[in-house]
Length: 512
Image 1 (cartoon, rainbow, N blue to C red):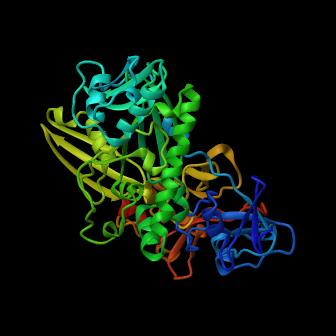
Image 2: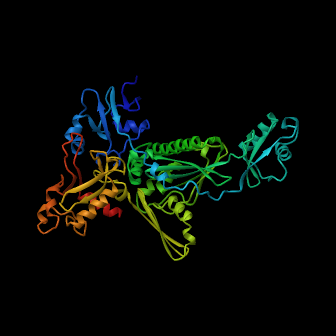
């Protein structure tokens, strides 16, 4: 047993911990996903864990700020402020699979146009094997290959594999061809098994689709949370992590590659496909996700003029990055456009055929990063913004994604009561997501608690406002700025008031 360890429930897994580390840092190190939109700075209050056993852990200033007395009494603490201690056991609050709902929006029944240049041929070597000939290898291969194949120089690993199989095997071989050039050779008959992976590396969600490259059918799809979210909700938080922590870039790169590999294997299991027959990987994602996947330093994307290190499409060898597939598989990351307009936007433009649209056409990609593309008879203009505050609750003090426990709808009733809908009917509410924040802003503007500039009015300025009866829900934060209580204390010991302050609305304005 290590000197310091943490047991994570409900996984019932005990892992080694470093002296001086926090529970959040330990969870990151061992692959446990804890929601930490602020990147572990103690600002969002979302990295909630429950400590079991005795003695009760110390209460930090941030714990007191974000948690109710009832929660503190039940052992809830912020993982980013909870130091590891001998024999510590914590229960993780399970995150909803943030990707599953996105798969429901994808039509898996509609085939795509296959790449007919990639194909397989069955081949039986001649009786005279390479072991019996006394001519140069290149000439021997030319004699062994089926007629009509290109005589272009072959990659060394293809040559080695071909020579070994022809020498030792008398049965069928399968040749994988790109056009008329041999790119791989496999033992046995693997005809009809020609797969590719299309993947979207989102800031919040990873999505992977297994495709049949011969028929154009999408065989299965899998999605899940991007494990990098434990280091911050938005790309700037992750860039900062790379800049401020030695080894931070490598850490985030390993997380995204591992996440994609796991999803690809799950997609293969669902479709009954062998991962070894994956020959192509095609990826999209924003520019920061591209850099981190490729193992490039994203620091230049964190400062003006936000210049990427690479431009155009980037090829890679999946096997060298720990991704499943044939040893001869090839991958491509679609081209990015600018520092914060990535290949995911290029994918939208290609899928919607925006270059073929006549007249003005607008495409909008809503996510942690939001992009818009305006097409005008072949001319495309694009822009991006950090949309996380508006749509995923990032940088909002009590913001969270649209998962159970989040307030997603707010309505001020005629009797001046405030009605909140909580996703999953899960009480008490843990926070507010982007749609709830937008609802709240609209309602407070309607009843006059917010002016047209987005300023939340203090009680003393509500004398002539229609919403004056809501003055009792207004308070002030530690800086003296107005705070609006969306959900007041319900008497539930687990509950904490859900409030938004002036800075939250400013973040929303910046995103919108």
